[in-house]
Amino acid sequence: MRGSVLSVLSRFSQEYAAGTPLRLKLLDSYLLYMALSGVAQFLYCALVGTFPFNSFLSGFIACVGAFVLAGTQKNLRAPMDLCVSKVLDDKMQNAMGGCFD
Image 1 (cartoon, helix red, strand yellow):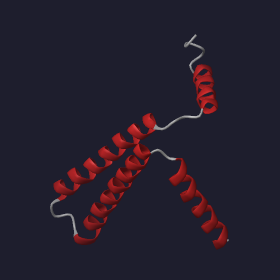
Image 2 (image 1 turned 90 degrees about the horizontal axis):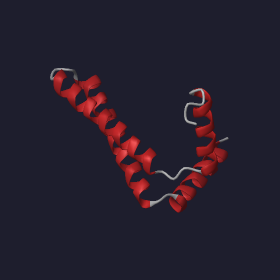
Image 3 (image 1 turned 60 degrees about the vertical axis):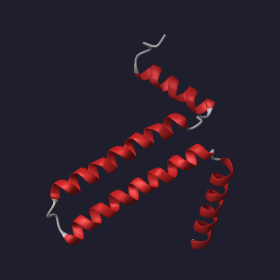
Image 4 (image 1 turned 30 degrees about the vertical axis):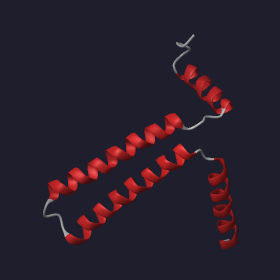
């Protein structure tokens, strides 16, 4: 079990390094930074206390907002497979009752 997990992680990291454009890698590193920053703020609030609760709330919400905006940018910049795009378009047309015709 452990060997299969390690082999999957190693293959994922090799394919990610080889097939991901630099801009997406930068966005991924920023997303990781925002997630870790939010987790650190939450852990600090949970362990130390909530005395300046407004400060915690504003910092945490800023991290969440920056994460959401960066995730949206990543979704806009990521190359989408043509087949996946066609399937999503077909499903959207079916869901909307064909109003895109």
